[in-house]
Image (cartoon, rainbow, N blue to C red):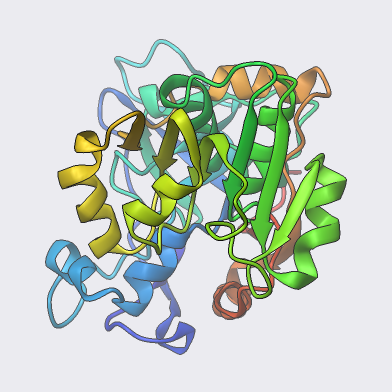
Length: 323
């Protein structure tokens, strides 16, 4: 089968498509023919080897595995292990592989049945591949940790990205006032998603405006916890799902010491809320956003586009097309 691999850290130029061995499912696994996979920030970080601390996990000088990252998938079940009870050959599925070994930029992948959720026929494979990782982050950050409530003022930092686009829509379901932060060229896009207010981070510093929020949901985390504290109302909640390692460490070590507010790093659980997300999509309350699609052979181009930071929502690689 064909798969995208890399043998050294670097730009998307190091990506190659190679023939690799076809996997065979274990007793509790299914073999999935992948139709679509979307790019997440994790994939870019492990490809480039930046920040440096990622190399402590994947190999200091070169990747321990040539398998390219990738976790958000949608496809069709081709084979099932003898202990599998939830799926059968021909079922359409989607899932987040971030807790089960990654490696989604390939024609086939063996996946434990618990990492997968049935894909409804009404959802395209491209849309389905945009939903699991970013959607679960948004639900767990806003609802499970953030305890979002009607009438609150919510700040979403990175509102035009893969998680932010879903977070804006989910936050509005709770009758909240949403302010979304991103680049100049993405402001109208965030308004169209439902944001009540938008901020251009190149022109305005949300920590200096004097406005405060009940809940801050952050995908970037590039400031000190004291700056975030300034933008929180008394008893407000700050939740981060990723960003600069030094800032995350500061919040992890000292955030709980902050008085009259809560500062938390999300303890992510893959696939926990995927069924809830699918229900929202089927009810017309949530829409995954696909910016551009590329073929498997164009994966390097897809990553180059990701590296520009100009994308809105998700970049999807269509590995194959269903008959």
